[in-house]
Length: 176
Image 1 (tube, rainbow, N blue to C red):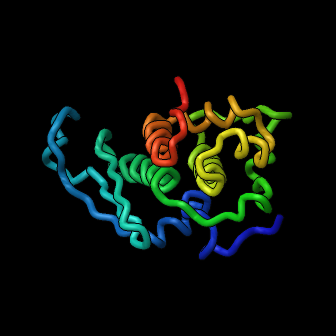
Image 2 (cartoon, rainbow, N blue to C red):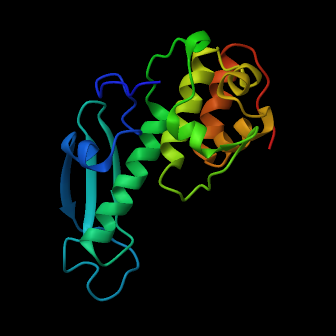
């Protein structure tokens, strides 16, 4: 499968340099724990993905650079969960990233890995195109149903969002 143009690709799948070009950043101070420099220096980073309007922040570290990295990671997750790109489900071929992470019918990735948001976005795009059918999505993506459900439920927000979508079409929620 050839790479899709950035205008069609999910924003959670593009490299960080390209994603940053689509974002607006600002810094500020926030209250809470963090030591003596917490409210003296603007170390909190707020990022907005301009095309979608989705926002994220990083503020738990004393370093603005570390907070920027955390904000970008959170933005990728929000994009993966809340933004859909169209896919013709019947013709969908798993991405090279997806195929590279697949071992038989198992998907090897942890929640904290940098590939997780892109894999989650692809999974949710396919499942959404199939009217929230996990079995059909697993078949198209070449993994077991339990592996696809596990990938989605790794992020509580993703699991809850999928269950809300499934309820709108009369399907049972995924169990934990």
